[in-house]
Length: 174
Image 1: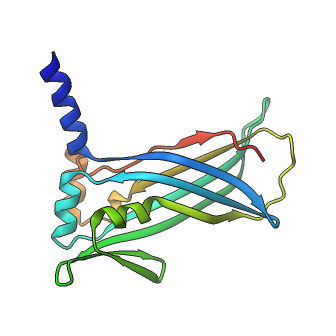
Image 2: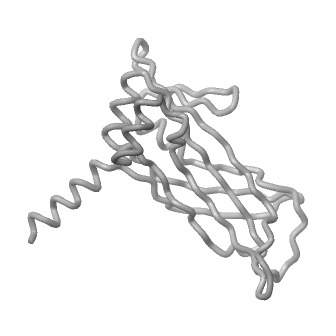
């Protein structure tokens, strides 16, 4: 039994994953800002693809809904940011591209920490009423549809490249 439990832990470590460690949605000067921290671990096949020159695209997605009792929830905000992570073998550096800006990192761990860090992301300027029932959703995932077609097929067959936090849902105190 112990061997089975240990083997499951090894398989999970092999698989990689994303976990939300903290999140905060707050108002400042009429804007809605988001801070969050994801712990990101790439599965072995994703690391291998990255080291062979494949650029990995990730999305951070945020949504804010007003919950309603007698009608469909109202989607108030939907925002998305895309990041591209690549490895430059000649320089032995990892590059994280955010829009047109990039940052270089000496280690994969440092690049993944930066990918998982959300600081003062302006997610909206919508006027929200105090006391209303809001629900926030946040997700970080690898965009498998942006992988080369051969890797998309491999991912379709065994989903070993999948990196997805799933929707993390909470009720913000606005």
